[in-house]
Image (cartoon, rainbow, N blue to C red; front, side, top):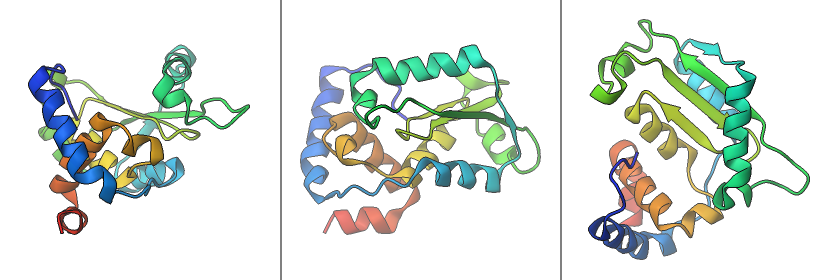
Length: 166
């Protein structure tokens, strides 16, 4: 998960990473339902049904040119959202929460149409899900998405990363 402001140095690094890996990447994004299943298989969750919140996330997708291009014609976002229940299954996530998220529940939202993924409360979970999710053709064109993905697969999927460095 990228938190730093986009400084000139950071953008230069993103461009470099993109130039090194984008041509080696192929779209490998899994569908959003598999990500939801992945999370629910690993953690106990509580559905979030706050329509105002879900509409806000949906509007962000529609109003952002990068994410809205992923919507099929005549479709609209279908958001699934939940919090990760703090229990034995999620203890590693909650125990490794960054200080800025301290005592905050872990929130996950994913759009079943575009694959838009939002995680609040755990950079670790976001990185893991982003590595698992993969990239689509639009992501591969985006310097930030490629840089973030490479960082995540280095962290979680060494064999895939090593295949890209050959």
